[in-house]
Amino acid sequence: MQHRLIATSIPYMNAGPHMGHAMEFIIADILARYNRSSGNDTFFLTGADEHGSKIYNKAQELEKETLEMLDENVELFNTLHTALHTTPDEFIRTTDQVRHWPTAQAIWRKLETKGDIYKKKYSGLYCEGCEVFMPEKDLDSEGNCPIHHKKPLLLEEENYFFRLSKYEEQLKKIISNDTVKIVPEFRKNEILSFLSEGLNDVSFSRSADKMPWGIPVPGDETQVMYVWCDALTNYLSGIGYSFDQEKFNRYYPTYLHVIGKDISRFHAIIYMAMLLSADMETSKNILVHGFVTSAWEKMSKSLGNVVVPEDVINVYGADALRYFITVGGGGVGEDIDYTQTGFHNLYNSGLVNGLGNIANRTSTLFCKYYPDGISTDGFVLDSEIDKEIKFSYGRYITSLDVFDLRIGYISVSTLIDLANKYFDEEKPWTIKDDPEKLRHILLNLVEILYHITILVAPFLPQTAEKMREIFSLTDSKLASFSIDPDFRLTRESKDIKLVTVPLLFEKK
View 1 (cartoon, one colour):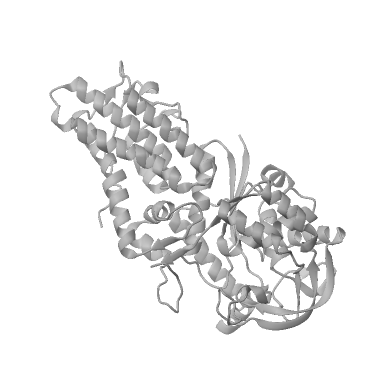
View 2 (view 1 turned 60 degrees about the vertical axis):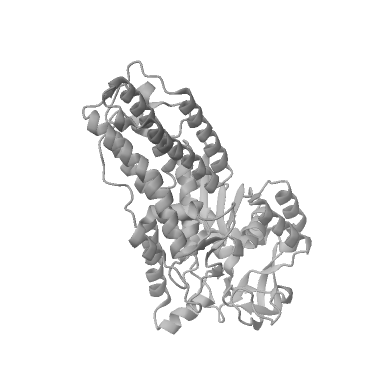
């Protein structure tokens, strides 16, 4: 058993969640569930980034106390986690003065002791939307932030800086040799390309009179911590760095960060450099995902193309949205395009006509002809079916171990297609007068369906729960549904009884 920390980036709490947040939570949750089912001690961490001028100014605009606004937004994110059936073990807030603040300040002191924090006057272009100082080369042709399409403000302040440039060569080495493995490969190459241009030191604080909402810098309360040493240290405070050493030792270093492509530099470069400075082990893996677009345009209120996750869930259910995020795009890290028609068609073809169809047909026919169950005595699973089950497990495990959710689910689809094809070819409804042959066909189908239930669970947890009910298992070993390529239900169980359950998916 391995101990694994899987963490999302922590969303900025100036507004409620959007489809991109749903995407990230779903990806992390699938991988967390997969690791738990594989027997790994897995801790799923997420939280809230709650400091900075943008949040303070937004609260002023709404005429609310800052913490009041933050509490409301945090509740929106927790509500989304519930709606998506995501399962974080911890939701760390950066306003948590008991757990997070001591961690951030302890890391600051470590960097300071190392000689990597210094104070200087600075003049630069500051994008409030990104909450970063931006070099002119990163602006678009009109001098705007390429993400927020606004001109950055020219600010001149005396701030503390972190010696990021000191770690340029070390970062190149640990990313090139996959000590910190960045997935997909093209995102790794983007980071290495950025590093090849050279690193500048980064601002690590802001004047408290300019940004009053933040964590005080240790030993200098005229300054508050800037986003890096504040928000990025959530990966440490969320597992007990300053208050629960046993938990911290259990889950550190981070096994996997799940982050969006727009913030990959901050995690792969700044956070890794902070860990190097603090003489701490770097993270193992960084999975960089794309955006959810609408007709291949970035979703924005101004374009009127924003898709609200809860609106989709209310019509199709959470598992349908999880399915779309899993298979609706191309390769690892690519954008996923949402259109109502495309989503609708994917739902009906993959879930209603695919998974839902075989689960309903198998359980209904089984219960019709064998309401009291079937003995497995003398049954031998068809060799081709056994071979396909083993193959699907192999590809499934290999894919999810490298965070390729789409290929992982395609491995499940292979079994779904196999079962539907077998059902259509064998036509068990036509051979009720040959009970032995009917028993053989149904037990083959039951075996496939059992393994579909296991493998689909990380992706579609609600659906898997309904499918588990079909088997009506009470034996703890049989009902564990843990990922085991060698387990065969028809070999381990003397008798099998199924029950019917409502349709897994209603046609829309």
